[in-house]
Length: 172
Image 1: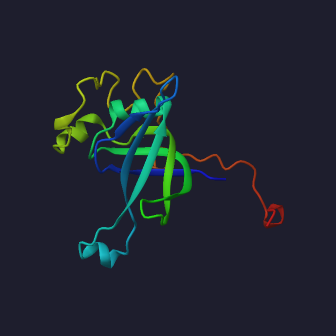
Image 2 (image 1 turned 120 degrees about the horizontal axis):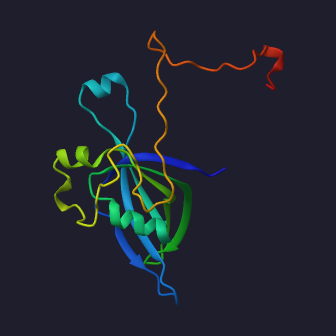
């Protein structure tokens, strides 16, 4: 199975292009800076590491990214890893690894994004009339935010454990 789930910040505004087909297809490319876990000692010394992941989206997903995503914004994406090769200008064989994204989600509210000073170049068509807790705009299907469970009196969530299992019941 080839499935990738990432959460990170856009390093620049997405770049959109359209194919030369009879019906042009939107193609958007962007890069996510995804934090990498580091040891406590390295984190305490101020060392921060990130992986910069190249992402590509096509069609309606690309149009969504172009319209709503901006540099510095925290987003979450779901897609698949793809490796391709090409010959550069000197005839050298080069390899490129990227994530082809199918699903895109906001991982922070618009207010949070703008309060960090990143929202200055925000798209004027971006209208947050759907609240800060929903992660998709209204024109993206029938999205409803997940229902919150109430913690029990001891501040722990109730967990349905189902039937009890013995070690003999496990397949490994």
